[in-house]
Length: 354
Image (cartoon, rainbow, N blue to C red):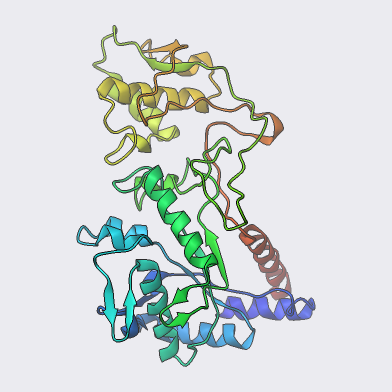
């Protein structure tokens, strides 16, 4: 709160308080419910700070920003009904008095509404700061599920259906997480963390997605310059006794998360796993011939080793601002501008406090 107040003072001094709203995005675990959305309340240890935050937001005309991830509910609970995570209807509807919930998003959202109501701010605008579904890296994380969830979410929001506690009044803004995959992101929460993008690293849409703008679907990046069509694979004629160390080194630098349980490359066999790791490293190193050596265990091939849904990548060149097959990320919407503004004002506040 002290930092937030300092930033607000800086905005006021710069005559920007009427243009820039300060927010503090919260994860959905800031509130809880024994079983029903109407029982929602902020966690006891957070009630005091949340009350101060909500009062500040309300006095400055700012919304409450929350990140909601039904996928995490499914991922973290084997008993969570899978169809309840989506918007296609469920056999596990939740009845809460006169209200019936057919998807986890609405249930989570109204749990927050109930929590805000208990603080006296039941009508506070709510923005979804992050919501999405990963396309790889865990059971249930695949292209089909990601498309079904994101399209269902978009249809639900643009249809102005709202939720049982806010009928006809959907969130004022929704930010889909994320734009591109993040190949270097921490996988501490799970290997899926690197696969939230609706576009692959080369700017190509992973699946068709109508963003609610008429019939317009995602548009692929154009004129992408790829490296030559060649891959690094393991030489199966060599003694592979010491290959594990090479594979470990390759995966410590490149992204090998699709090889893990639930990933799209999880069932390509031992030699397939080694080749995938070698190639990921090779592409990341811009196909430098030395990066496919691995003490003589690697070899370059011109035959695509991809198997089924397991795609062996070819990197992109570093021209025109591209970097490599290593992924980057962004959010849909204006969040990068919000972050830039906040960083600038933190700098300004530090100067003012010196």
